Length: 128
Length: 465
Image 1 (cartoon, each protein chain N blue to C red):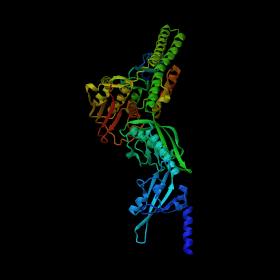
Image 2: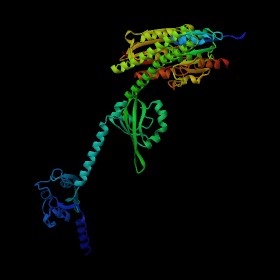
Image 3: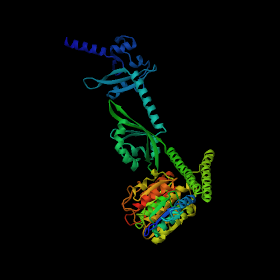
């Protein structure tokens, strides 16, 4: 990494432990570019988001007790974190997530995803 | 000579008419009869003279009961009656009193006409009307007839029963009708004219009863025209609330099932990618991990499919279960704890013992309650949030009261993406989702607020277990 370039901090909110493992594996050889926090609970994820400084959130939707929609809504509600881009990665069809499309700084990937797809989206967010 | 010609002409005229005409004295003896009267008995007019009409035509020794000829004599006023004969014939008999120069009734003119065919036609029409009425009145399907000006002309008892509105409350009313919901009103108002002209077939609409309960109907309607002009609009309803509920349940089931199967399948596929990487990098650990993931997720998908097939076989797809309200509340309160503490809000919970169990799908109730509490927490910056639950008849009444920003105008709050102001937090889906869930359980949701900054009270009723 070039001197003076800060590592990008990514918050991943995903409750499936296998998916968490997949993410770890995907980010493993990108450890010089990305610092990753993985949380299995949206409530905890929200707290961490507001406490830390993140460049990107990768968010699952189907979670309990707080689903990804509510995390999204709360994040957008907070002026301190409102503009952090959110990449929704879910088994849901993006057509089922119409309500997100009305907001800025959001994009979608439908599972299953490849490493290439994930990092193309991430690059798109973080370059802009 | 002129007088003779006049009398002769009168006789010709009287003999030409088909009605039986007989002039009688006060004793009901025939003084004069026309040709039709005498021909009806097969005698000459002269042979009728001096005889009484009830002797000749009715073969009686006294006047018939209700005889209009006798009544005319007695009352001095014209009378008429329909007389039924033993041979099935029906006659209209009219008696006209005849006065002498001293204005005293000196006789009576009897005019009789056979109306057997007309009576038969009237009876057939009456029977036909009765038959049609009985079809409408006894139909188990609600039927409504509307005039061209949209006023209601007729509703049958089935429609009264379904809507809860009485005939008196409906007849004469013009659109919008009391069973229209706000959504129906917005949609149907515009289309009403065209619908009345063309008719509709199997149109599904959501209406509401007098008590506010919503129901679905399938409407088939036709316009009845005469000489190209609309006379009225006839509509038949079939209640399909049960079918809609099943469709919704099926849709939810398919959606939930597809999600629950798609997830492990997606994970298994991603595990394949992981395995490929492991093979490329000759990383045995990664390959083993990937294999385990593939196996576990394929098993999970397999189990999910088997469970749904088993449940379908046994007919026990448990869509609703006995859910502990208190347990769900504890989870939600835990989930919102950090925001409540951050805002220093006072959170009070009061659940009466018998209000703990509700009959519902656990996931849906979690979503419902989470959205309501989440809204209360989101829109309250200081003060308190009180949650209570108690039994009210067959329902559990849940009340969430906050001291938050309140609601100035309630119109449209259940509309998707509605936000009071563009800066209002959230995307505007919470309340519409809650309403959808509550209505699926035939419950109610009400939102009250005394205005801006005066807090909000949300009351939900759900079936008790």
